[in-house]
Length: 129
Image (cartoon, rainbow, N blue to C red; front, side, top):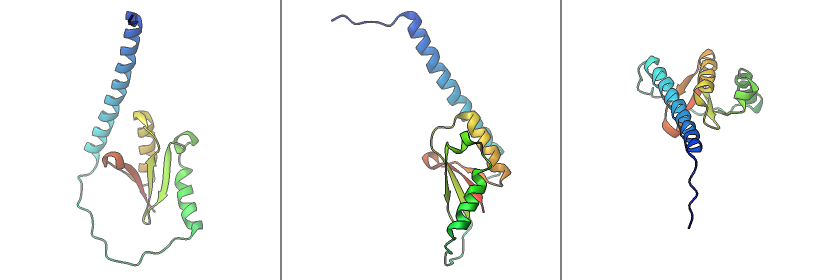
């Protein structure tokens, strides 16, 4: 059984690709860390009084979500899922954003008065209505 070994050049090329990915991950983690450090200290969740939920009309839901969608470039918008959650609009990434796209999206969200909710796999952006 002859085993074909990759050339040194090919191995170095693959190693450089891995290093590039690790560098991007490191940059993303640094951005997230800085974002968390600059955010205001976490507050305990407010206890909401029990109320009967109102069902928004489809026109008002679409318009509010559309208002938020229009704040993003087409490229960024296609990376996101927009959902009406009652008092806020939840924006969840469809894919890994990378540090540059994350920063762009976070900037738009902050302009809209929103925030980033770090919750592991359930992390998302939230914009109040």
